[in-house]
Image (cartoon, rainbow, N blue to C red; front, top):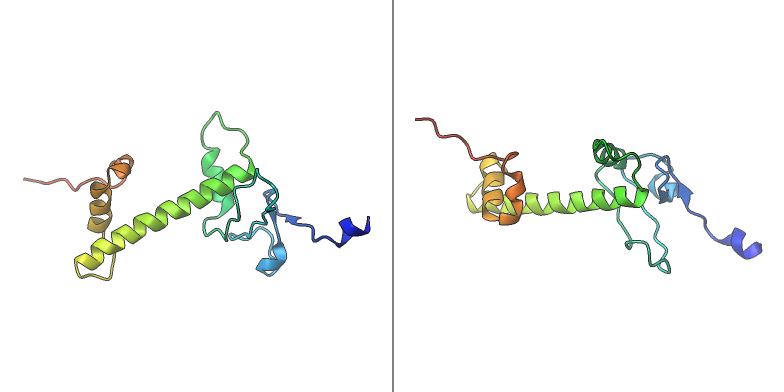
Length: 135
């Protein structure tokens, strides 16, 4: 009908994720995508802003688990956004430590101090271990 054709329809990119390619200069499949959200749809997580992490990389990582064969586009977006928020928080806390040490550059010791200071980051102990003390 006339009403349906006058409504702006979202475009679907290569990942099958709803987005408007025109908002990013028409480049479908770019690392950053703008996600259109329907405010009347209670199943959507809310408006997501541009993603700095490529969705394809997140999807590939999620599918590294042998049992995972398919991943919903919404799940990829949520994991990507959660990852960005985590990294932002971790980097900001590490930066605060660097500033406290009167430095502008974040060093390994800042990452380590951030990890040690927050018990929620215990899962990173194998990735950011304390340096071995050689005697």
